[in-house]
Image (tube, rainbow, N blue to C red; front, side, top):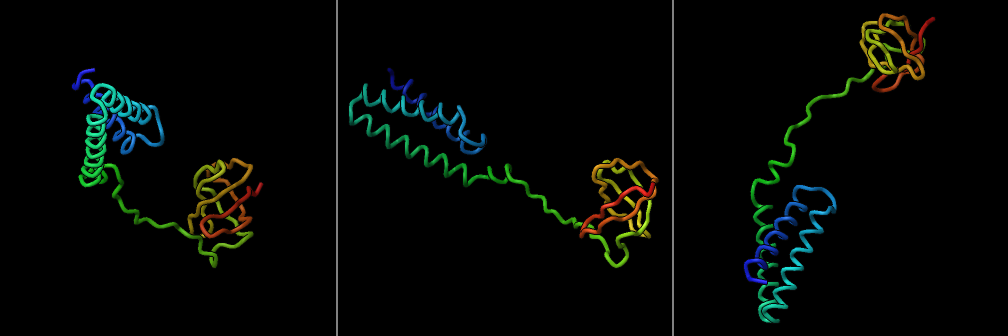
Length: 155
């Protein structure tokens, strides 16, 4: 094998390993192929150029891999891959002093099995396990949780 083919094998393997490390999650064919190409390139270097050439190729490959990883970590790669948005929303909680078990209300949206219901003056997320309740149907509060209520139809 010529030197150019060996260099191309090793470089292609390094690029595939970088893709595996930074872009493709998990252990995939790309990472295995990259490792095999690097191993093949180093093997052919030892076979064609002896131990001296093989050691040099091995050291250069390790250094090139280290430099490529350091450059990838140092650059803005992670800034492009990571989400930067901050979540500033909050969860609406049920005011337990206003809504109690047994209170009556009306559904604002269809509950299948989750939707919105108005109990008194509050519009609350309502769950109705095992039922589908149409909009504007009278309901009764069965249980009050911190963020939602469980209701049943009044029929």
